[in-house]
Length: 161
Picture 1 (cartoon, rainbow, N blue to C red):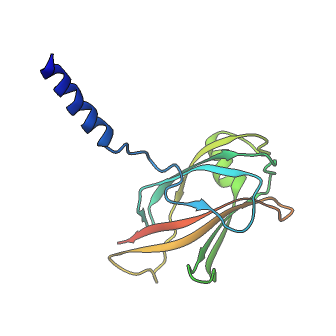
Picture 2 (picture 1 turned 180 degrees about the vertical axis):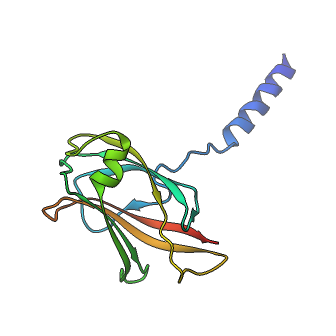
């Protein structure tokens, strides 16, 4: 009986001290500071990680749409400096055309959403060579009337061959 109790106590000790690893549903991204946005992004996962310049990647984005995402909404990706939020790059993509439609849905999006889409990570002849760089980016979903619906920001890594 004592041996069983000792084994049980050892098991409980190791089981309770073993950390439970959860995948970060936002890949390290956080909601943007300073403004409350009506639609929450609950999942933002991209693969591969790091992204490969000039190669295909996959994005999984999900959230809660309390305000309708209209046809013509933009998916804005802005590179920013971490110390003063200065914009260093910006890309506007049609959210409906690039993310919603390839996932098998249509705009307007009136409720919770869960989309998976593929894209090719941009590259140019001016890219650095044989290195991995990290960038701070802000991702916003903006309706055609200019109303920002969602915003997350965080670091991404891009590998340049």
